[in-house]
Image (tube, rainbow over all chains, first blue to last red; front, side, top):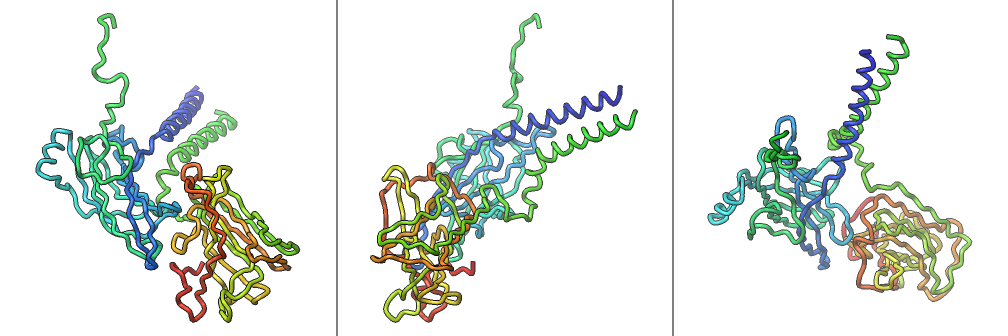
Length: 205
Length: 215
């Protein structure tokens, strides 16, 4: 009898993992990007594309037992015309956070101040052109990044990089420098629950 | 509990653990992998084409490779009869021309340019047998940025006769994207000039090109 229960439990475990894996694979890839022009020693021009976002979007803040909040800021850097990855970069990031639109707008009047500065941006091992600033997103809200440094254009030219972006749902601002797209702001994991906290029930229930 | 029942539970437990590992292990441990040569989008693909016995007439085209709709990166090797780039030059160019880019069913989407070639004098025996290397694509020295098609074309004005040892080898190492997502839109472009030749091993530094590589 006990062995039957054990088998049932294990089969249920397999089914649960398969369902969760399927959900995880449907996560959207929402990032924004900006171009930078390169002049080669022979005078010819090239362009590189820097794509910025959070890893494993959509992002939810850390919540014990529900969400790890493990969403590094990530960059993809490539040659625009060929799509070849650029694997050699020296980059830092200043990080910004505001709890809500009200605090964001208040900060916008005074000038945005980073919460952390000169955080190292490292290459992802075995994945050239992909870079992480590892972090746990602790709170839901508006996150922003200012990435600076240089990217080596195939060992020939060091290209200065300067990318500034707040997440897509932040109030209108002149901070963000992206040419296209954007990345999502971080939500509370409870926000996506259905039915939510405010569901009204009939008296009969 | 019988021996058979015990085995069945072990088997199910093992399957459960394997399923969990496959579902989450790849993500958890991917950044610690040292197997950098295997990545999503990589295809190990080598095409070796013997040219011996073929005579390509003036203006003739010999298609070598077509990876449409994927544009790819890789390495190109050509051994061919050759001639000096200019009179008295110790750098040689192939009699045949190698072009790459994308040939589309819509003319506007067609874009072909000569491949920048590096002459490898150390393993060449001009004028009968010259070796040339190229990087596909070569963002530093030019040529088409997105390559789905590679062809030989005879721009010499006379027949070219290939002999034993004349070959093309194309090694495609990675898919960079889909030409459907990043099409050429300025076509038709068909640059039918001879290949630009670089030579790192002569005294002339003006023909070294950019991004010297030992690959």
